[in-house]
Structures are given as structure tokens and as C-alpha cells.
Amino acid sequence: MSYDTAINKAWESIIELSPDEIISVKFLGDEYTVNPKDTKVMSLSCNVAARDFMAILILHYLIQKLKGLKELTGEWVSFKELPTGENYYPSFKTRAIEPIIRKYGHHTEGILEALGRLPAKKINQGDIGIVIEAFTGVPVLITLWRPDDEFGPEANMLFDKSISEIFCTEDVVVLAGIVASQL
Image (cartoon, rainbow, N blue to C red; front, side):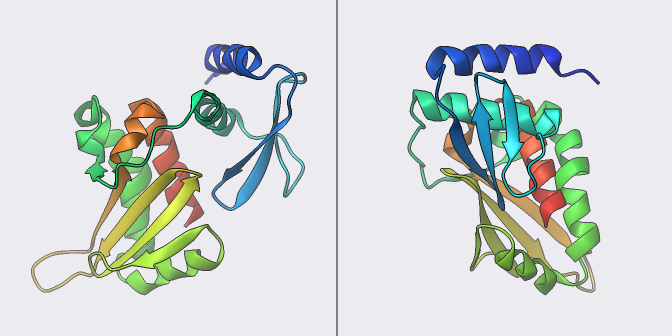
């Protein structure tokens, strides 16, 4: 799949907003440099270019950051509550929720291992809950419920309501999938 159009459009915006400055962006447990002159997004931890889908997400975040990020609302919303979230929910569930349930559904405490690898903290939600700071100002709440006699394990991923001012819904699907894969 080609991401050329999205990448080129994002670079045009970055170059317009900050043409000469190399900018550092923290994303999950890594830091990336964004170089408008070379049009490269590089991981500092392994000194390799970010994969296209990650570069697009990082660039989209940076565009909003350069314009001025919206304040966190403190209100958690489900994916379905995002604009067109109902339409993208099957993809979101497949890429984000199902992998979390497969990995931690029968061992919910295992998700706490992410606290040492990612910018995350445990919170009192569900049976186990953590908040991951995906980007600065972009928290993601993951809640797990243990199985019981009637129901299987469950998981959910919520976002601060401000996320719809930072990313389009398609980007949130990508972000959620990356977060799930990092757990």
C-alpha cells in the first residue's frame, strides 16, 4: 500500500509551519527526529527511518502541535464516539481490542509490564487499567476485565475527547493498533 500522497501532503504542511528546524517528537517509548530539509522521520533509539504509517501519524501529530494542541478535556470517549467511529469500529476492534484480549484476557496483570517500557501509569479502572501517554497530550486509557462464569475477558480503549482535534478517525485506528502492538 502506498502512503505517498499522505506523506507528501504532511511534509508540505510541516515545511510551511517549520521549514528549517529539526524537531524531536516523543512517541510511546521512543523519540523521533523530524527533519523537514531531508523529509525524514528517524527513530533516535535505533537510528532508522520510521515506517510510512508511523511517519504519517508522527507528522500529523506534529502539524497539530506546531499549530497549538488543544487542551485535554479530561473526558474519556470511546472510539465509536469519534466522528465516523461507528464506520471504522470493525477495523479498530481487529487492530486494537482483539490483540489486547488475546494477550492479556486471561492474565490481566500482565499488562502492567508495559509500565516499565512505555510512558504509562496504572489507574483504578475495570479490573486493571492503565493510561499510556502515546504522544505528549495524547493519553490512551486501556481497561481490562477478567473473565468470569458468564462472560469472557473484555478490553476497551478510550481517548481524551480532544483527540478528534488532533487526529482524524483513520489515524486513531492506526494509533490504537500501534499502542496495542507495543503492549
